[in-house]
Length: 92
Image (cartoon, rainbow, N blue to C red; front, top):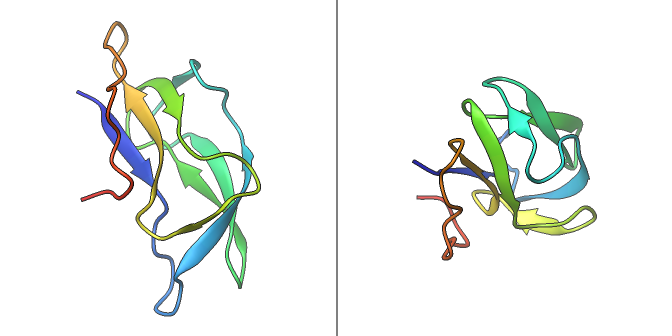
């Protein structure tokens, strides 16, 4: 089952983050807890980790973009699973 990766809220006043760089390319395998993305907030640069094992099936947002918290930035799928054609803007 596809897993959405979104920008986490890291502080009470955090509203958005800048995608600094992808650490894993689209189509590459990922493991739970592996850093896959660096984001920059108004206070720090932090790594976002893969939520589980799978394949980074699609990168939805690109480096340099500023995105609100909870915005979906990528999708992790299981090996052999199709990447969803519709990806919501926000994680539920």
